[in-house]
Length: 400
Image 1: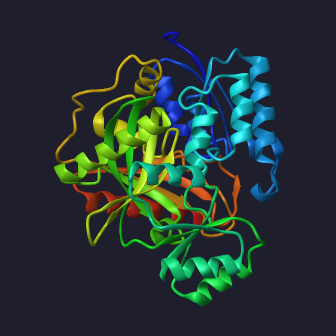
Image 2 (image 1 turned 45 degrees about the vertical axis):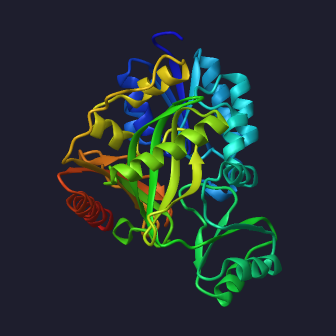
């Protein structure tokens, strides 16, 4: 592999941190994302965004795959791109990923490997063969099937789409009426029903070479944080690195991740979402994110590493990291702020703690990502509180 590359970073969101990391590693970076954030452009040779290219079109009306493919071809006419790095939001667009990979190699997991972990039927069947625990799961296509599944699983339960990211569309049902109300509003189509597990939502960030892996960090996931403008209980609202864990818990996480990596042949930067049960301290696997995660900047700051550099080495079978320097009293947090109403973005570039910063004047619909904030503190609680304080500063300005 060449020492310096022309890299295209693709994703709906979470593109800025990968772009900065790749730039600092000495590569020329080109980007395509949804919003065209200012900090993405800062570290890009050329930055395209779907909203800027296609105008004020609601996301639900966009043909996302066609838009990404068209913009990728546009960039390729102007530049000799060497490789693609994936950010969040395109994991389940298997046909798009294959079309992109045919144009420029996706550096990390090839499309067929991404599909093997994102196809939930296949994924959970393989976990079952490996004797890896996951929430009791049923696939349903309509209300009748949902009601039958609820008898086996019991209430409360969680219902979620088979495709998606960031916790979008996930709901908890406390009883039969909740399930009926939810599914009555939905057209027939496949949904996942799972047992509701009381516990700590977490993720493991790993570097893998296709057969073995190294855990970088165990992370706390923040879900449905009201202070970040989030109204949905399971919507991803950020993370805190690290999640404090016993040596036994870390060892069990390592055993699980090594089994998953070996089975699916995962390469480069990957994240594995899981729940740590309050009652039994059991680990139950939720899903694999076979690309860079939203934790990237937090991990880099916590460990003092360049994650894109580690990713490239692992994909090239050069080495996996060893002897990582993990501080004993340091926590890095990221809060993802969501728009509380339809707003126009003020000037947020002045805040040194702000990330994923949209252009001033851009209209953000209610419920869409507004920006992120990064915090650094000596305790988990202080880290989270600081993020909430930063969020209030930004919301106060947005209201003005």
